Length: 216
Ligand code: UDP
Image 1 (cartoon, rainbow, N blue to C red):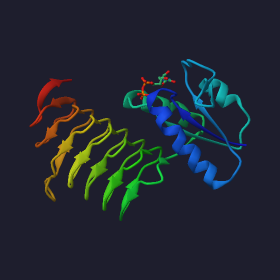
Image 2 (image 1 turned 120 degrees about the vertical axis):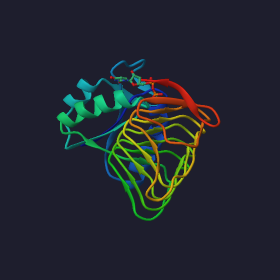
Image 3 (image 1 turned 90 degrees about the vertical axis):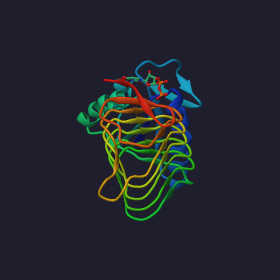
């Protein structure tokens, strides 16, 4: 039995499950599809069983595939390490209307929600989340465990380092070839921010134009 699971049965996971169900259903093969949650609030969510990780890993399986659908990147990374240690594979979930143009490299375990667009010549690391209506324009380089809330507009020649979080509706100005606009590791971009300059690692910026709000 091929076993698939969405790790996290809260808001993010519930928005991802129907995409994976549709993909697996269309492929026609036999599969088992559940939520994994370490703090389950119910036995079933939207018709799918909710199992604790230890319960799921104890089930017999020919293959195991997980998508970690939790927006918090530190939690996501911790759970990915745990799954990796057990030989679980990471599945990318991609809505059927996502547009991916030319020369897009995308690491494992991503979530590309409905209406996401990745244009051309883009490199993206592992476990990227691009929520509804987000786009990434040409020549961007995005690290591991980066999270886009809905409606992020990431223009061309932007570098986003690992663990950065970009809030809903934020706009990131385009950089220049050889002189990208850079969002540093673990930076947070506030909802609706208009980012016109590079943001240092660990900084939180908000507003239009985006200004420093806090530093880690
Ligand atoms: N969760 C988990 N294991 C962990 C941490 C979190 O199963 O080690 C689950 C948690 O119980 C919750 C979900 O992940 O159901 C995270 O939900 P939250 O609403 O915080 O985040 P979102 O779904 O918006 O990313």
